[in-house]
Length: 94
Image 1 (cartoon, helix red, strand yellow):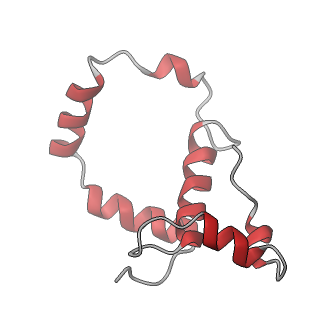
Image 2 (cartoon, one colour):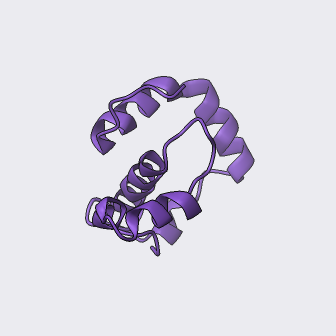
């Protein structure tokens, strides 16, 4: 919610500061993190969110049980590729 807008990263005055102070792992560009976080925001609480409250989504056991089942059933690598495409991340991480 408090993540700077994409335009802020392109701003010649504040853009370098945003990139400097919002950096995470060396393997991923700051802009990539910003794009993925905006995608998650949109899918969970933004205009692309489902029609019900985020709080009402839980009802299928403990969070750890859900993680275990998702890791068994979901093709997470493919979903990561799709998220990168949707977010406009075209380069591969080192």
